[in-house]
Image 1 (cartoon, rainbow, N blue to C red):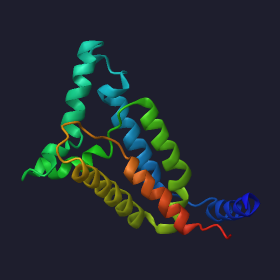
Image 2 (image 1 turned 30 degrees about the vertical axis):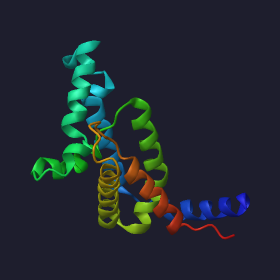
Image 3 (image 1 turned 60 degrees about the horizontal axis):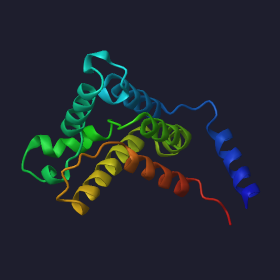
Length: 166
């Protein structure tokens, strides 16, 4: 079975060699830049250190992340927070894990789906994942950030688009 999957994967990688997947690279760069410039990275001295940095991180996540208890308020800001939360990550491990999986699986998935379709799929599934979490935890005041739902959808699409013969 592993040998069969390896053969299928090699064929898939050969099929897209030299082909580009620009939206995957755009998403990788955008998420990384937003993280590095924000307080979660701890790299920007303007946010301070210690307690000041922690307070800046909490305010940042609350402003840009999804807060389930506030999501279903009738405001434009509440409706847009799932879109902004897709590009904000909570820690280096969170960012690096998501970006690794996006790089590995996003390139081939985008190549097979197409640029526009892949982008709409990524953003749409990420938005729906955040909405689903918020609906299941409607009273939570904890902010939710990250693209894990969108990344999971990309993995699912990869498995669908590159099936392994059994």
